[in-house]
Image (cartoon, rainbow, N blue to C red; front, side, top):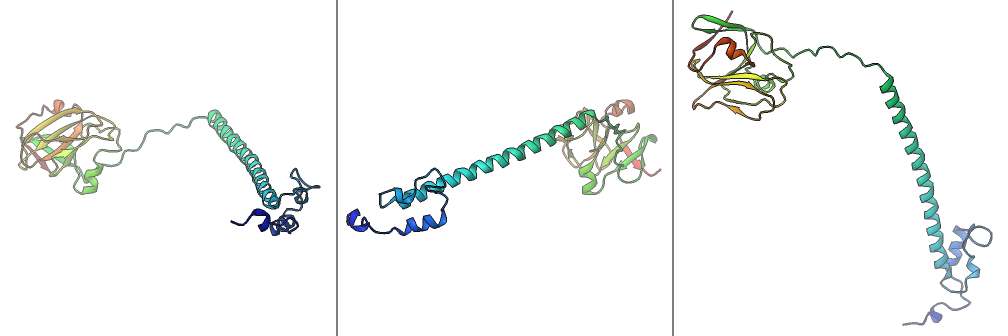
Length: 222
């Protein structure tokens, strides 16, 4: 290997020193805390001072960035505090009763041996109507019920009130009854084999109608 003295003669001019003196003239005897290039006798002094200058510049940039970030954070925090005070002092608006989404289709009658159990039976026929079901409602009016043709499995996730569920055979026979199912049940299904349709009503409806397994129901127009 070539000795360092041979590669960097003592009286040789270092190009890096000249570049550093042109780019950073303020750092030296008159400008900063770093020694001037001429004050360093080491031939590699130009590289050393340039590195120190970069470090010093990075520190200054970082300090300025921290100052700006602190100012921005202070402004944002002040806005949050002002908003919280405004919300705290603002009078609470009465949202009023929420309007329930309408039940699908038109009302029909549900009969048992000629007796009209309700004339407020609605039918969820389309996939969208069946997916919505009773979601978004706070309850059902007295006598209201929702019929799901050819649906033998359902859930109560996202509902706001308990319901009664009956599963009917294609001929209208009551195959299975569930009462007072609370919201949050991921799966409710007919416990009897074969095809079935579901009928939903507010909790307590089956008891009020004296509905039991084996009853034969019929859906008719009004």
